[in-house]
Image 1 (tube, rainbow, N blue to C red):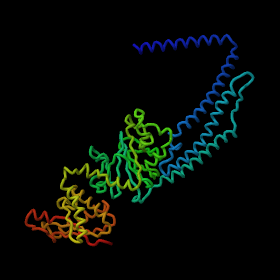
Image 2: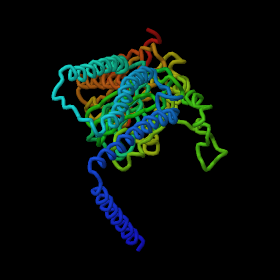
Image 3: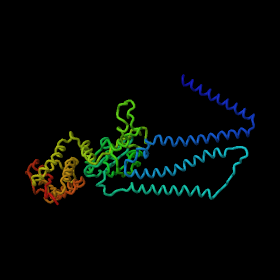
Image 4: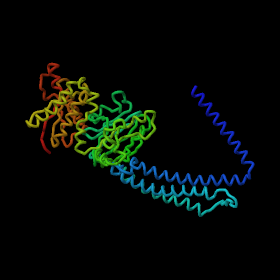
Length: 489
């Protein structure tokens, strides 16, 4: 009923306005038509000037009033090194275009008044003016060329890719509706291979678990970066177009399905340092939660953020993620606390308790072998497919842990030995044991072993540790071992 009454009232108001306009039109027709036109034109000209003045005053007032909220103004200087150059280009662009903006709007509104229709004045028609055309074409072209070239110079400084990624902080970000999957490489500092056909509920990135580089990769809930270290972010998308946007770092790059992109930047302020910049600014001295006047202030709760700058769907707002910048020492500590996604979610402890236990034993046995200076480590859970040198999947955790242990003891020279039982041809067994030793060495090198030297050696059936007359004894003879040849090279 309320809606019906509102519609009726609106209709009646429109009807009254229509009849009033008709009455004004009739009244005007009784006067001199030209006088009416001149008076109307004069009023419109004055109103245009008033509007122009109010418009320009409003533009400058609101830009000044909200400067402390805008990036590049007030306290919000760039949190990255390259962002300083971008802000410099922004200021030059604002000064150039701002000058033109003010000048053209003054001319627009003043000309609306100056050239209003009035008695004794007639418009002059100019069909063409080459000089004016050249000025209006060449001047903007020259200015735009200078702006573009200065921008390209900054772009080339901030977007060079780097071949040697060993010293970079690497991060992979994959956008999806509606969130981000954040992946860091493990100690090997390399990302494992991905295949979109492998994506499922437990493998959101489609990581190929047969690639040992994937075994130490970590999935995290927030981005953590070290101050003063160069960061390379690999950006992908799983479904639709997204946009990786770190506003405080002046970083923005589209995430395109099927076409990886990247950005490189260096954070220059930790989160805490940036908060201190906001401290004392009136806009950030108010309570963060208006309903809790005694709670923390806005500057105390400030966080860097990752946002999606594309309108990728109704849940677009939920793609906001936290970014934390800390000192390098704190970053290294945080990194060591993160867990491998593979070991935590694919090879769960409750599903393979022996593997997890053996992985812990590898480090302990390695330390014991180093201290005693002799002996060999038997890799309890390194297995191969029957009659093949192909490692089985349950071998990966132990080998990955061994690789991490070797990296912590750089400078070693070790022998990786392969052994078989006495079944079959002697020459075939010797060849198979060598291939299996080679396969283990290849896996360890791919997993990252620092400066460790690995020497693969196949012994076939020549060094048994049990009788080959029983299945149990043959199982013990089929083994892979690691022993130290020297402790420095």
